Length: 273
Image 1 (tube, helix red, strand yellow):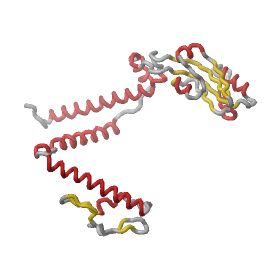
Image 2 (image 1 turned 90 degrees about the vertical axis):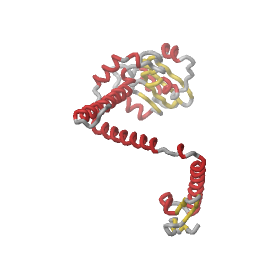
Image 3 (image 1 turned 60 degrees about the vertical axis):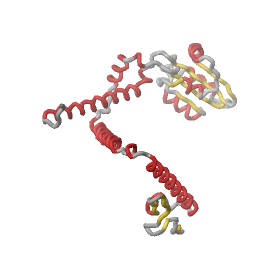
Image 4 (image 1 turned 45 degrees about the vertical axis):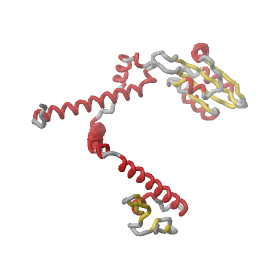
């Protein structure tokens, strides 16, 4: 093969430099030149060149072997290719139509209505909890204050802004959003506690404190729901929104097909015999 690799790591040769031949098909250097970067070392360029050429040769050998051994009736893919081409054309048109015409604003009332009329579809697959959690060093002088804060986090007297500031200053880790539903497994991955029966544990614990040197863990379980219960609306909002958007998309596309059919019928663009 007549080529050289320059100091700038570019492959240089005439555009018709032949790298390989399989039967009457040839691989030229210009066919693969875009695969190389100026940042590649000479060794890397040579390694990639060898890999590309070898891969091309193996592919061409297999192709030519298949061509020689298949009957002509098995080598005509024109119908399949046309079907595939048509599918791609329709898919691209529908995708652009949806991007321009689909209303993606879903009101909370619409989400709530869907939830209320489809509650049987929203069965929990795992236990979920609302909780507050704080991890603090054992030697910290604020351990007692941290314990009191998490124990009383749901009281209206607790200033959430000050609680957040306290945690940012003294806690190793924390979570104070007691209005958010979270899988119980996520909490168990955070705190060093062994739970053999989640349902029993949740029913019998509200405030939990664990000393696992060198840290204290304080957890306030505000609320919980057991798997197979009806999943709460707050936990399903995003899922319902996606369902509604998908329904809108399907309706938009169905209306598109119906409108095209009706318009074409009125203009005598087709006949059904």
